[in-house]
Image (cartoon, rainbow, N blue to C red; front, top):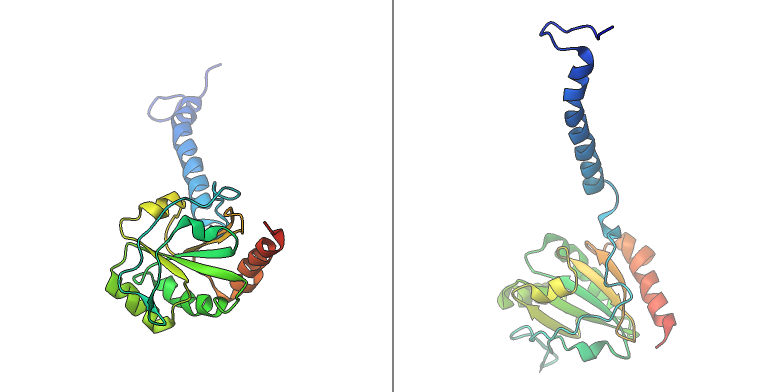
Length: 198
């Protein structure tokens, strides 16, 4: 016995077959949206965890001085022997303004050094930004074209990395440092790196 026909003359079972691609597309779209908007973006894994920090040299931020001396740019040798927090930031980045005072407070911990990578910014705006909030960085590399940030695997500013004494990336925080994740996540990862030794 054949399937009953619809008013347009097609059997009902064939109409479902025609709708299957639409249902498949909707399922894939729902899965994509769930992955895109669901969950915590700071939990995005990094392929660089456990690997040496990129050997990228960056020039100093033009005109930036601290206590009368020029602040150096990024030299990869700076990572050897000391735990480092590397922050990728820009003056035009709104969340960077919120995290700046937290980084300035963190810089008081003499067991570590904070390194800045200034992303696609003008030197004047970057210096004004640091003048407003204070400069937590012992070195600031100017990444004017964004290539160094690509080597670091940066998705967008701000991002923060913890680099161990051996120059290996231990942790990556996607998004701004906040009062909540500073204590519950970033300081925990810093302490792990400090305990790890060489």
